[in-house]
Length: 348
Image 1 (cartoon, rainbow, N blue to C red):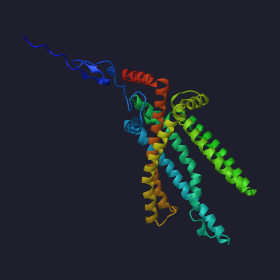
Image 2: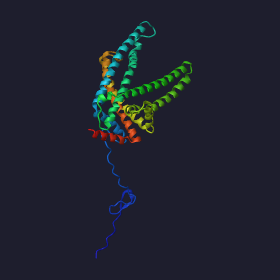
Image 3: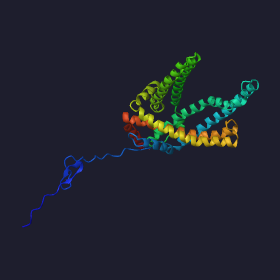
Image 4: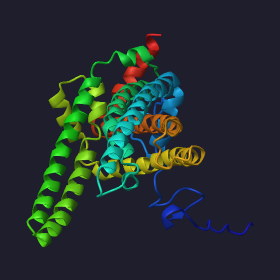
């Protein structure tokens, strides 16, 4: 007669509970339910996006529609920088001539004391051109990115036909004017206190109110970050769209701020990599450290075209993807985008 067989030895299962014959014991976690991968008809998956997906999606947006994202951008930026360069060269010549005449008839200062002043003034005068052009270009690029998300392409002609771009320009102008008025009032008060020999009050007011204004500027910049894509894509009235874009950022402030600061830092580094060698080269070749000669302006202008095209394209792509990401998280926009992608495929 065979000896009795000993019972199986219990084996430790998941969660530290015994499992008999390889079967999960009490307390073992249930198998993770399988989830289908997110639909991705275009440059990003239709679900809440991570930082890496936003950064990578901005590059993919350029590759998905290079005619608009790079070709149109380069043309528009080239025209703007050319106009700005000519204006800078002409205005700086006029200002330098006026300064030379004033220095010749005055004993208070010499012409060497004001070297580069003409270039500074001319660049300040020409700066609004670049600001307006980059604002318009950002609005146009947002349209292309939004189409690339659902796997579609938009032609340069379609982009140029968009009349809502003027809403973006108007908002940017109003916001810039409001900031200029507040900062101007702040500076005027500081100067007023200092002129009345209230140095302590001027310093204290300048530091405290200056810090408050800086924090307010950061707050407003982030809370209005999604206004341009909302104005370009939603098709509603100006006032309601601005208010809605402000509400969309609620609860996402720190995430939007962190991503935008990171991208701005990356873009700033790339810009300096392009612009700084050009400035050094023009100073050495043309013996013009202040960049006032026409040759120097041409060299730096070419570098500025490259840097501005890259920075505007990438930043516009990131802002558009942030807008889509926030709407997916708050409103389930991914469902609407999936339907739009299916409709586009069916219409082919």
